[in-house]
Length: 88
Image (cartoon, rainbow, N blue to C red):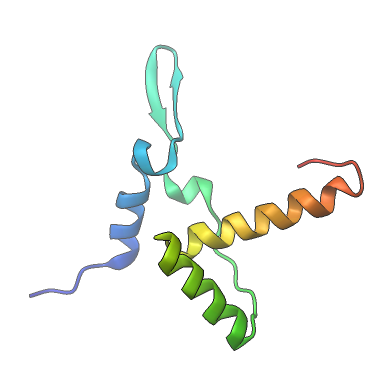
């Protein structure tokens, strides 16, 4: 049995309206952005405890780690930027 390309499988799964809610109507037709247009991959260095904590929370909240990390970062940005009366 050939191995599945997980990056292709991930993109197809995440590009559905139910998962990302990014379909919009343009000229009477629904247009959907691909995952490639929505997210950019970056590398950040976390401690083992931070990684373990994220994995535990993702498990109990039934979320994938990328989704949880976006929520964590967005919550931090909202809180921190509000100090400067600024929004993204």
